[in-house]
Amino acid sequence: MLDFKGWLPQAEELQVGKSQRVAHDCGPGSSMIVANKIDKFTAWCFRCGEGGIKDKVPTLADQVELRKLRSEEDSMRHAVLPQPMDHDIDSWPLEARVWLYKAGLSKPMITELGIYYHPSTKRVVLPIVEQGNVTYWQARAVMKDQQPKYINPSIDRDTVLPRYGSGPCIVLTEDYLSAVRVGQVTEAWSLLGTDLKQPVLAKLLTDPRPIVCWLDPDKAGESAMRKIKRSLHNIGKECHTLHSIRDPKLLSKREITKCLQPFLSSC
Image 1 (cartoon, one colour):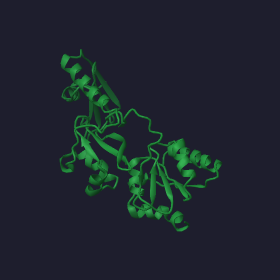
Image 2 (cartoon, rainbow, N blue to C red):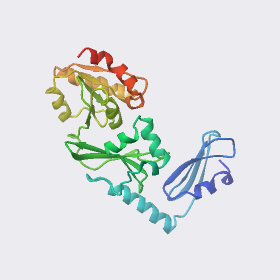
Image 3 (tube, rainbow, N blue to C red):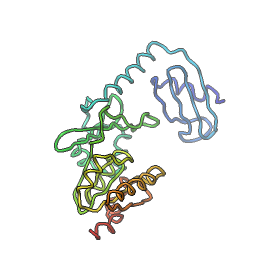
Image 4 (cartoon, rainbow, N blue to C red):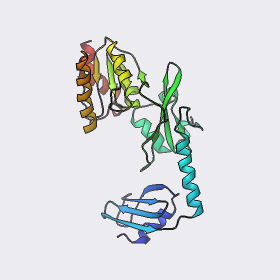
């Protein structure tokens, strides 16, 4: 078990419900994660392969802080965009900006898409706008070890279909940002996950354009692409699958164009 002196002071500095990567006295770098939970302080050092636990009696302040955090996150689960909205990109925490820049979004694109930072929950909010109306949104965690990864409104999203760009073929992507990036080359539809929902299937059935399924290159994405291709084949629609080393959103526009070129040139 880790010596309390090497991690407990750092854990005690955190707000209840929070965790953070920090340095440990075993060597350089942020090799340890510490957390301030409602009933205990915890630590785990990845270099040492050891952890530590210190039980505590929750203070009134701890309980109030935890209830406040949960209340703020719970209040976000409705169709209206979460308030307050911080659109001043330069004032956002570095983690929020880097997450979007890494996905190839420039400041003008972020502004145009209406993306903003929600300071109360330390999340980036991605509004989904269809025909001029906000139909859905996702609040993405950008801080280390922040859970859950996404907060979404508690509404039926089966008919929600973010679509970006235009072109001779339709590309189905897994997430919002991938659809935005692929939409720079041709029309992209985000499934907001890996399932092909019935309303989306119905729209594809009436669209004559070729379909390309390009989900994230992990086990879930690969499995879902096979299932989607089979579902479309069963209704007489041909579906091509595209496999890449990285998520579509992590590729440059030139790389996206190169990946899609065989399908675009055949349209």
